[in-house]
Image 1 (cartoon, rainbow, N blue to C red):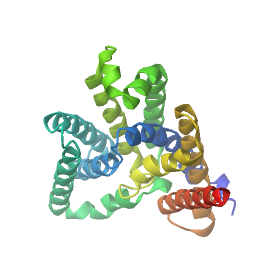
Image 2 (cartoon, one colour; image 1 turned 60 degrees about the horizontal axis):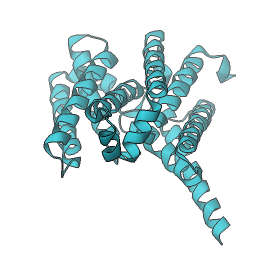
Image 3 (cartoon, rainbow, N blue to C red; image 1 turned 180 degrees about the vertical axis):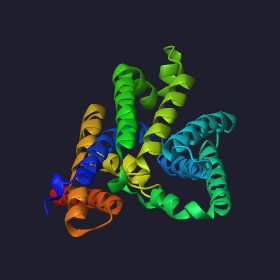
Image 4 (cartoon, one colour; image 1 turned 90 degrees about the vertical axis):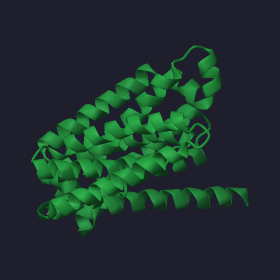
Length: 267
């Protein structure tokens, strides 16, 4: 059977490629802000929203997206309150997200199986509505970054200098967190809440080993991500593997190869 002729695989490939573009774009800025773990936090909050969506019979990804956006505002508010211990905001919101998701699981035991697919990903079940939502988020993320590229570049490399030059630091902090929330919300059905942060961080980790400039690192991060998504989905389709896990393992394999090559060049 040629998997490329199957509509479910074509939808999965399109959704994966779109997320493979947006996730590392956001990941570069998160790594520069030293907020790599924010992906896990927003993913767990999104799962609580998904659970509520099933409970009240409303589009789960839409409710998860709303929860993630609210969590992004809360994180920024807490980061401002705990300036010296900004990482506390992530821990607090993650704890609240896990607690709320657990509570909703106990209330709606009948939909636990459906919600569990969002933990591990179910990219083969993407429908046309899901693809339109993912495509909309992709267009929004790419457009915002393209329009504000210079300002965001300055802010994330030297926030103090950006503030002195008159850039609205708080606005850009909230903006990048909100965009991250959108990306994570639409990604959890593709790679799962437990693996979504991998798409944000591992391509960036690979790019930082080979890139020589910021723009270079963005290019390499997206390239590594797209290669991993494509190879992971093809391998999963041919050998009946878990797609989300295959994508992440492909990324880790690339990271290991790059580390070995760089070590070999130094010897």
